[in-house]
Image 1 (cartoon, rainbow, N blue to C red):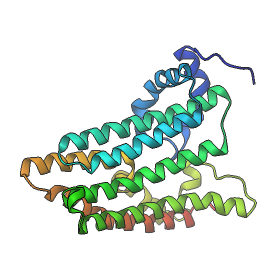
Image 2 (cartoon, helix red, strand yellow):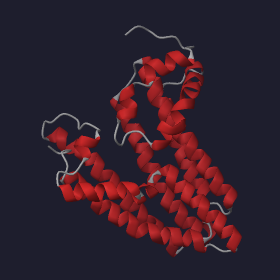
Image 3 (spheres, helix red, strand yellow):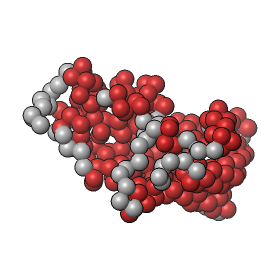
Image 4 (cartoon, rainbow, N blue to C red):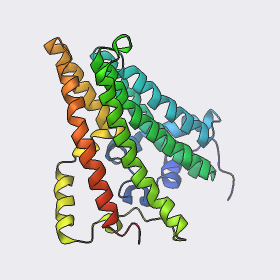
Length: 262
């Protein structure tokens, strides 16, 4: 492809790096991306271009912001929880921009995809652990609540593994990558389809996605401050255990009863 300018206009970036297929993805595009992040990401992408950063370097910044969010969440008080939520907003912005950089420069790669997925796995496993440390009262008093956070993190990684293993299984069977569409993801049985639609109306399974997780942690931190204790954070952490377990089982069932492995 022709070499593109390092100083494109926002209109040029939108036209070249935000094809309709991005917004048509069933699970690959977060609701925040559709709602507001994609509106501002070309501005961040243009800054990264002018700074001379590669797509993989932008992904590295994305990973760093997620780790920083988890570390910040371990600190006491609502200000730290707010900072963690803002860092995750930065992460999702960079997550949009690294792909836009790759599309603009024609530099998409398996390494970039790998690092991107690694960043999300790391962030979304680290956040419940951080919440557990916060529920224990900080790094100086790590105890049972941190263990609860670790249990949630393992369940979160199990859900991630269930999704990733779809690609692994298809590759091992000589099948092409799965299409990220609602039709492919929908369960084949009518009862399961109805249950899936009902779950979509109350999307409890999104409690582990980084944006939602930090917003819930922020709400709990505010409640803790008003009550003068850590009961809200601890209640949130306890609630996440059965929710994570149900999500892991439900997600496995959804994969096995859909066309994702066909």
